[in-house]
Image 1 (cartoon, rainbow, N blue to C red):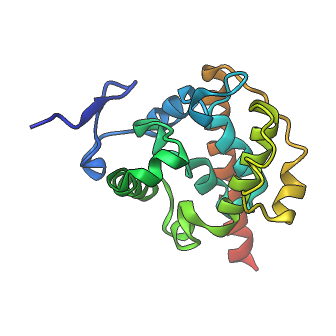
Image 2: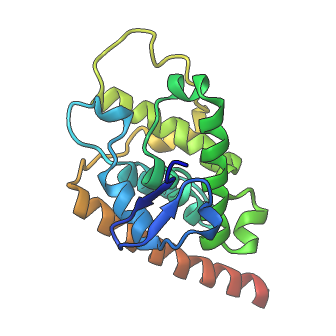
Length: 197
């Protein structure tokens, strides 16, 4: 039988067919996301999934920010597969969904998961808007190719002024981890304010 485990930067083994039983950390997620390039690496300069997630998190309400940081976290372990290829690989979609669920269960609170977790509508809207921003700045001009993205005008208004840093992997990883901690503190403050009201 084929070994379905990969070794992570921490030295832990991640089993693609048993993500729930795998030993992985938030550092493993951040490390992988910082080193995976968006758009299958076909960009005009390196732009990580970690930075993409960072920008998406900035565009959503704070109660969705940590889930937004994790919305593409499965790519830390199984790579950034292009949309057309995903559509051709139904088994991949099932594996991706299981990895996403294991990540959400490990790192998001029950309250964050109850708000829709990684698939919450504000995250999906911000994700699509950032995809359009990134495509315009990082990809060749192709009239009509990106126009099919169903980008909500409200999300576009917030996203269109985003400045892409195109950071080196280690910087993108560090920024992602700092954002995780910052949003965790803000979420605690928000929950405390709501409890006091």
